[in-house]
Length: 167
Image (cartoon, rainbow, N blue to C red):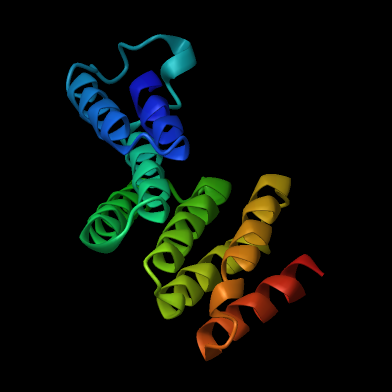
């Protein structure tokens, strides 16, 4: 867990090599976990949470990269977050909303407003079933991040949907 969080924070700081090193440590450490044998305070940190956390590290790295590195980080981030989404239990609605918002933000980082719009629609559907200030905050960030694409129809629709949902 700590290595995956380090990967995320190193990406935020722009230390992309250190972020990738921490990703490797997190992935290696996860192979040592014996389900049901970890401390009680770690029970929530399952493979879905690991995939989502590392996926977000790649999403942040994509925003801090250019060219082929941006595309590589975006692809990894989307793939890992999709793995998290696929393995989340149905009752983890807020986590599933986050799992749709992360690739939406990743699509924007990669310059793909249509992909962002599609993921945001799923997140907005889930947002309507849960009251979470954190999901609302992430929707606001997504709205702001879509501004550079405001001339494209998908970004206009995305921003309008978020504005309506947050009303």
